[in-house]
Length: 221
Image (spheres, helix red, strand yellow):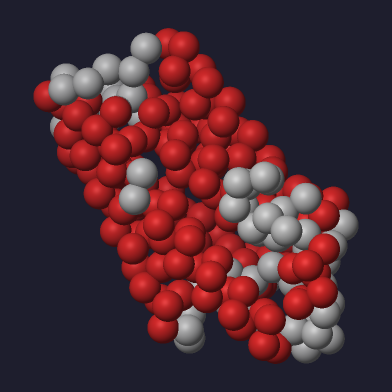
């Protein structure tokens, strides 16, 4: 029950923060792109959260943990949070003042990209029971090299990249999208530092890097 309450508080507080960041700058609750984004993100989150609670409670505990100890990780998380907030607020302001408008084709593609990224995120969590929100090597942790991890070394970050870049377009703002383009920099910082930690502390990770060559995007990086 304690885990359920903690997860519920995180969910409700996250939803409220997102609503405040969107609808106050927009100046109205009739910001329909905002409601579309909330539906696309938070409805699947409810079902996946329930799945984790009943099937993978230990993994849910790890995902609720968020305090980083690595300096570079703190930098990456801080940068991500700043970009996230700025993109949301600017998207809301963009709607209020009608600065840019995303057409239906871009809106549809970005909505599917957001959903695809989130379902990829869920798939990765099912494949890797060691996934914590903080960079750490856990007791008895093993290298996962199957499924998506057999293609790239950091499929979770690819999933979040797809989601984050899609968000401002779902919100109908090209200006918000331009701000969100800073987010990949935070991903690069996070990945490079995470690999330093894993190579040092996780047995077999060096061999895994030799086997799976690409970090984030096949044949590119």
